[in-house]
Length: 438
Image 1 (spheres, one colour):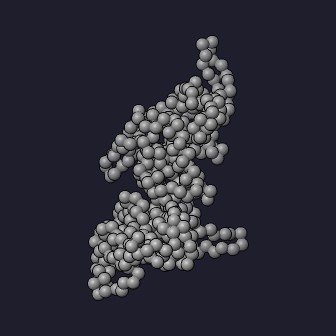
Image 2: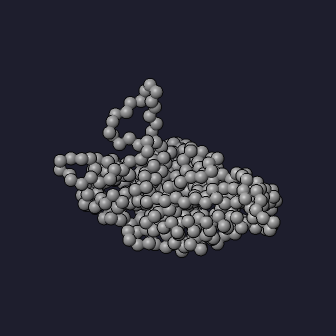
Image 3: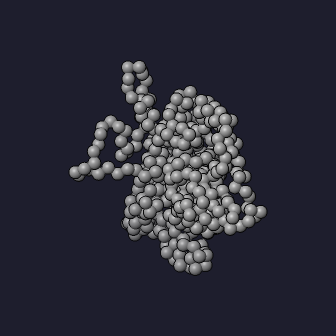
């Protein structure tokens, strides 16, 4: 019998830890190779971790809700293979180089703590601690200096500061007192109680605890409103040509390519073209610097069965034809709904598209997905009487009409740029070639 250690995998360049959400196996359970053994969550996405080998779960070293660093051993699986075929359990994969002064540690299930190990831990707790990218980002946004960050008590493993610790600290930090003259801004979210009153459940009141993803969304939305002065512009587009084209080709398209053709890839194509015409919409802000992104990576807000939203990203959308966009849209949407997205699937977006028409809404005022500076919403397509120009004069006809709305960061996108960009998207949709073949 041999033992194989399951380590926390690397989930992206900036991700150094993950939270264990659920164990699908218990100690003593049999597991097949590539069978899901647990689910983990990062600040970006939830994902499933498969077993690297077939065997029996011998040990589970970290429990649900524990935060575990990348490269740390989280479980041990025993196999029927010989010791020559699989590395000895005493040989532990070395974690990535520690950062921010945190000393790297190597452990094994049979090892005992040594004086040197105790010294290392003490040095870590008394010196500069490791902070996740999310905690660092919150500290930066709220002007929390490193000296002040060091004073915050952490509820995570080994005293690590978590996002919850940061939000609780910031809420108390801004409380008025005789010793403070300045009042930092309050961190809160709609429906989030900050301790001002003791709300009791009962009678006609029910208290529902936000799940982890809803808390992340709430924090992200509030942070966006604190960061960017939002302005929203609207246009109405006549999309009769593209509606008629899709109705005509959706059957042959799926038969030929094995992919459904929805309106989303057509919208993404128009947005990518408009960004090429107005590249200053494809930027982010860093202090007084404007960072223009050369890649056009379009995120598409996707509703999950839980009711939450996630934004997978179509990378280099301007380089894909309509078939390529349809394949990307369908793949990302399906994996999002089945909790199969990888961290890189939701990273590096430069612009976001959301379809409020899916819910029967004709228009919306979406909140910018930071650190981007613009987000476009497409409303429901409805038949309406519209005036059209012909060589014989103006006539009223029934047309397929829809509203487009663009929310943008008024620090760097003014009304002329935002309005011109939105109009350009509508122009591309209205000029859609309904004679093109599949």
